[in-house]
Image (cartoon, rainbow, N blue to C red; front, side, top):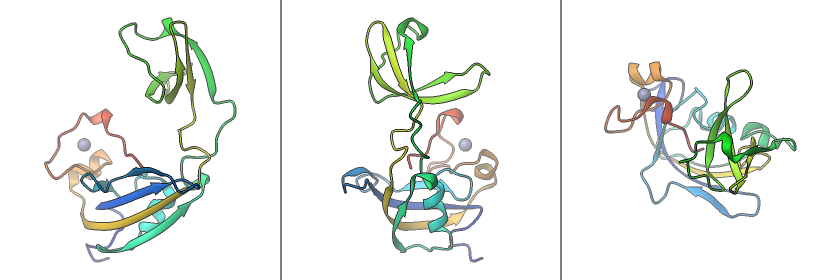
Length: 173
Ligand code: ZN
């Protein structure tokens, strides 16, 4: 496969705008640097990754991703309440923020804060976009071969090299 075509072991730069079914913009890269990701490792939602395979710089595409190829279906039992004292006292907890909690097996589970007061923190195990159909407008800006280090880490490194806390990097889409 030519090197400037999106496939395994390539790093893709793209601009995207994400809208929901109602047409509201949920997120866009248009006022930022393009998003860079390592293709084929699940850094972005599966439905979008699949649609991008084989595309080259300059390609523009509109992709509609159903929940099962996006952030999954919404689990109606995903909402759970925890005593505030289970969390560090000095941690500011606000609706909309993401918190990683450990389940009984010690697995790290990402949660989103629905509500918090002095006594109770209500968390949702669902990604905020779970159950949503995602409408992406995407423009492929650049495609390059991934470096050995990127392949080893399983994610793209920015144009300025390796400047991240390894556990801290999370794709937005
Ligand atoms: Zn890395």
